[in-house]
Image 1: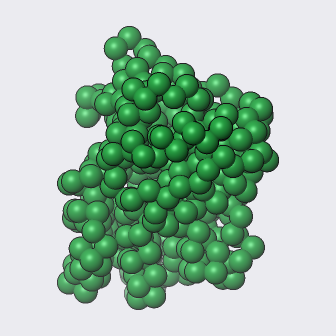
Image 2: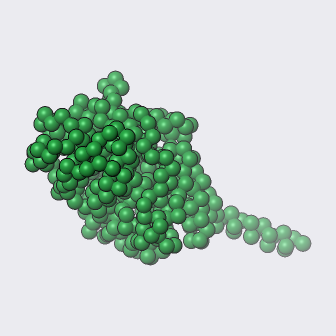
Image 3: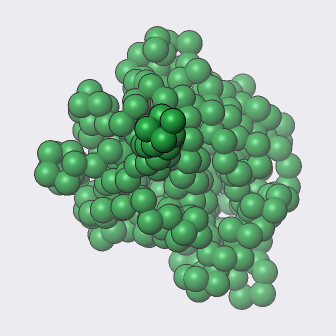
Length: 377
């Protein structure tokens, strides 16, 4: 009888230890050079969630990809082969994601994207171990197109950088925008001088401008656009009007409407606590990127709570269930492991001395991406 009890107790302890097995996470993100603010925010949001969880069974190794695909690939190889990570995360830029994610998932690793969502990974290139916690690249741009229709714009000039996310941006806007295009341009990734593009906008006969220029590119464009005297309304995604960018742009951004699946005034307890705790810890308001890092970590924690990362099928099912409290409120994955979610219209405002955004309406409700039908898992 005692032997049976001992065997039963051992089995229970073994099952418990398996459910709480240590998980090693490799975070590859941009922490230096152009776009560093985006990676820093993803990292800080992610690590805040880990800290608040009090977990000692999740180890995070963080490396700087310098926004270079070859560096990102080298870091991923090191993390998989030497560090023996179970999960990868952190990449901001879609060209880096395309260089890293397919190889990582092919080696049986899980990849949780807190940002980049290239169309190639949402459709035919989807993978059962790849989960995007942010959006599919086209989504916020589709919402901008929908907002432009509602506002009555009929002739937009559109531009974005020449890389995967830029191409997805213009594709997304055109998918929903019902008017004409006065012009369409792809700019150089990392470009800082937009005099030629603004001259083309001026001469185009457009009634509106849509642009996707994340990070420092957006700062440069908006300042130059404001100084140019071109008086056309601007619409864009949150990436060009997010918290870290707005302080650098200043008054030039006031009144601009942009689209986002998150904002600091989304009314739920998780979001309110996140905004308060992030500001208390880091001394700044959180950005879209910080919220995505926070949600990505909490998704991971929810999966670790219910499955062993070494049991790939169980861990994958736990991720798919998305049993966590998101800063966005209700959160669910579609069939291709990308979110189905509401996307809001936000307006840039000034609160005291701080430039920020406030939600002014809903652009798209319960919106899924256009590529899920091509994903065969």
